[in-house]
Amino acid sequence: MSHHRTGGAGTVLVDGIATLVTNDPSLGKGALGEISDAALVIEDGRIAWAGARAAAPAADARVDAAGRCVIPGFVDSHSHIVFAGDRSREFAARMSGESYSAGGIRTTVAATRAASDAELEERARRFVREAHGQGTTTLEVKSGYGLTVEDERRCLEVASRVTDEVTFLGAHVVAPEYADDPDGYLDLVTGPMLDACAPLARWVDVFCERGAFDERASRRVLTAGMERGLLPRVHGNQLGEGPGVRLAVEVGAASVDHCTYLSAEDVEALAGAAERPEPTVATLLPGVDFSTRQTYPNARALIDAGALVALASDCNPGSCFTSSLAFCIAVAVRDMGMTPDEAVWAATRGGAMALRRTDVGHLAPGARADLTLLDAPNHLYLAYRPGVPQVAAVWKDGELVSG
Ligand code: NIG
Ligand code: FE
Image (cartoon, rainbow, N blue to C red):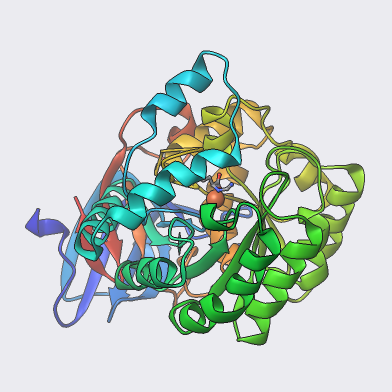
């Protein structure tokens, strides 16, 4: 649709916005900085101006939002989209009573090792397009289905061709070859594997969970990554209470993800970590608890205690095969005690905080022009109309990527 295009030289006015969510309280109402009857101006891939329509400056071109809603593009801070193979039967078995176990990861590892780089890249690109089509403009991507030096390295290379937010997750589970020698695998991950992988990644992650890595092993992985300049993030408290949250807060991780089973001390630690200049965000992944038939995390308790909460998809073939943040928002509102405003914030600004990004997740002047136009008068419709495609158009850096 050429009338949505904003590329080329000059300024573009996006006009006729019924509700503009800026996520900047100084620009509008409430925590979402909501402006009714709004407009914004894009210049050189950035937001140049946002405010009331009546006050909009002149621009070289105009896009008509036609009485709909504009939000910042979703910032999906957790995905595993570099993989091959399929685990739909495992999902079906869970829905008839089997429980989720981390061991299923090895099925995907075998398929991923057997796939060519070109196959992995083609598939990852398809997921990125799928995510764009659902309003996501920033997507973190992890390795973790290679588990050899060479396979982790090539998975990260594929990831870095599709995103800037690349995470090394060699410590996803112990590689099958090291089943009898988990310490040998730890030596590999924290030595030669990190040497090969650290230059390709921004983040180091570890699956700190029963059946994966315990507290001591997880600390070793994170520390080794940090020594090579990577920033830490943690998978924790997914399948039961455990040391993940405590460890994430201890090392100053940007985020601890899952947080399904939290003790009172965990909630308190996350509330304390929210006060820091570089906070640790609690990233909740409702799609996982949906697809593994677990209880949902208690977002209300976290927010009421003062913790920072983000929502992400965790798109992966095992525990959760959705890339839809709109779906996550709907579940978070229906079953996790979040208000629609909180859930929309968590999937945009919250995700940006979980990636320590200040250039995305909001639409104040200077921010990247990453925006999603909804076929709805306001952002409440994301949870109000679950399962209904409502993304009309998506711009990343001012360029139309979907719609
Ligand atoms: O975040 N928790 C660990 N890793 C993924 C699941 C990976 C899989 O089952 O393939 C997750 O849920
Ligand atoms: Fe994950």
